[in-house]
Length: 247
Image 1 (tube, helix red, strand yellow):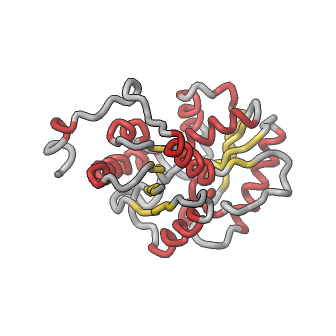
Image 2 (cartoon, helix red, strand yellow; image 1 turned 90 degrees about the vertical axis):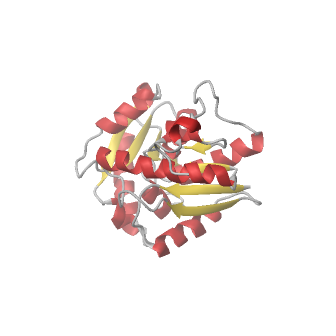
């Protein structure tokens, strides 16, 4: 099974991309290989609506060319904001997994209410974007709270997970106080830094979106599941080629 973990944007150091590929392939089932790559155009990280929207066009362009290669069995969007998820599913003939969507649905099977721990939005502890996304999934009644870590995403790159774990542990204590039965890590950089953390010191389950996204992608392929063309109609490529996409 060949999976692609596609990171929207540009500017992540090559050694960090290599590290992420190594971490990702430690989490797969036997027989699964994950390629981690960056789109190569767009923002350095996604911490605002502007950066999110500016990342989607280049990502879809890259997916369009990948579509013709027929190399991968499923694709994971490498951002916990799931940018361009619906459009990517219209574009591709293989499963496209959004780590946030998958993790929120898993959270609902684990607990009656869940919280999300997120980086700040444009430097502000604003939960509104996450509230809107979760409301759009029909899960707003299951959300206990949104908590924040104060580290910028680029500061989470690398091997040392101490600072991230300390901030997440503190946030988890707040989610428990607000009635959450489990917590979702709302950032893929946070997920990579804690991918092998046991969280034995906390009393509620911690959902890592990297682990969930890989498992869901593998399950889709194993079960032969595809996204419905009723919900995600196939893109009109005759219209798009030459106007949106360059062949």
